[in-house]
Image (cartoon, rainbow, N blue to C red; front, top):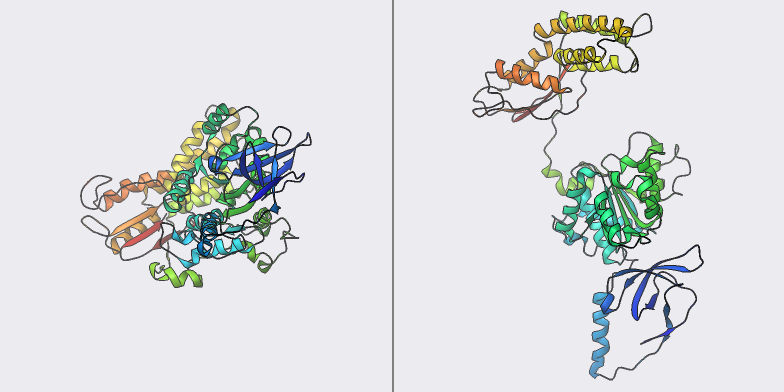
Length: 511
């Protein structure tokens, strides 16, 4: 039995009695008025797991001092009562924070993979559980985050969780955490936060209402709306998914990440592309985990920060050992060189001498974009003459009626005529693509499937018509081997190169 005594100092981890209930102190800070602001979690039956904030200036706070413990003898047979009490206590108590073994994270609704346990184990081995998970796409970063959160919760270090993700993956991340690891995350957007603020008193922090929250970075990064609330809210764990979006100093997203990193004990960053080739950018991520880890952002070694990140790809030894047999061998791409036609060469010469490298040193572009728009024309032509024609027509419509744009109008009309000529005379890359598709058996009543990626949607629309006509296929309809258009991806290809990856079942051609 523990007797209550007065104690002036209250620290995190202490047990207190407030309003006739027992509470476990999570954090303590002194307010501007001099009293203490105590964040606590309920321990006694009536308030168990309830989050609350107390102020010593308003509430009578009593500290339970372990030194005042009075031992009571157990006179039951074979010390039955004491043994049952100890057993029940062990079952309710979290695992030791010093234990780095995986206790329950591997029991989630997912195929057990040993390599996915490593980030959680490494994070728990640090003085503060902080880690950057930089595994490649497909290795299960979301699962690794779920394992780490489960382990922290098991140790009593994950009561208050904030997950920050891009809006596009927010719903998926929330569903994965709940269905696989039974971790409920309340989704808060701007409307949700406003509803919470309407429910709470004006002085109450809306981010203290729910214990475990998921929100998009676009919602939280606005400093005028939520910064003052987030600054005054402590978290046990903060997760920032797709953290490569927060590496640019001076941006609102970077300011948000720095603030959250200072307001939490555990921090988990995740990105399949954490390194953009600049050591300063990667150092910015590491500084979120440990501001003292890197002295010189331009000069540091991997061994200096190896305890703070995990970075693997599908050929890494531990990954290869478990799932290597599930990865299909990647074929080497086959580059098909294409010689431009005379009409296409004329367009390239016109682009070079008039738009990209004019002898006068000045392009005919009017207004802004004098250095950018010529490259827009060039990239459009690399996709197809049709894409260049559309780009020229749109630009002519934009500058129509502007007297100062007479020179640009003349140059665009000349370029449009050359593009029209190149379009009429069977573009060389179209001919090379048709030859390749025919060689691998693509056509009507064929089971061979091909995916064609284009730089511009105008090229996609043009190819839909041309390929259907040349290969005698139906365009987007029912029937044998229809040709269906989908949203384009962005791919950059040299002017005279058609890049293809030939295979028996699937061929990817980039144009």
